[in-house]
Image (cartoon, rainbow over the protein chains, first blue to last red):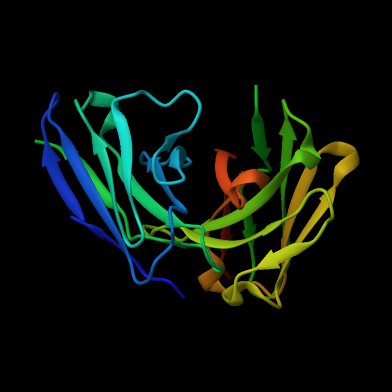
Length: 107
Length: 120
């Protein structure tokens, strides 16, 4: 199975900060990488697919980049509603696998 | 608007079976796959597999073969997850998520989740 490793596991940030989360795959996955946001007690929300394409309705402050094995999710100006846990997922190979999550907390 | 509405929480004894439903609306059901995912308490997301709603063909992650079955009733735009021989470690929230056929089934819309608790 492809291992997905996110860093950091958690971070503290303030409203308005620029936040970057990285996701590394144990082998190349082309650009078959998605990002999800999950708030406590809620279902995940899809943010990005194909490494950099925004899902419908996702604010433009979210962006994704990368290819091969290294990917990033960037939030350009953190808003109060962005405090959540973020997961990456590869969908290049079966089984689809997730990173362990990055919790974004309020500083 | 696209909606996936899942059935309610379940409390089951070890060895029992459970069926979780996922009713889709707001789009053509057979034009998108349905993924099933699991999240154990306090843990991350785990992909269980998906089902092609056009052909009915399921694909299971290795960890979810044997006791887990995906099925469909396209007449009511509903996907089902059946788990037999429940174990305590099956206690989790189970999610369905619509998958884009043009993007290898990557989820775009999610159900609200169904908590399955297995306890004697």
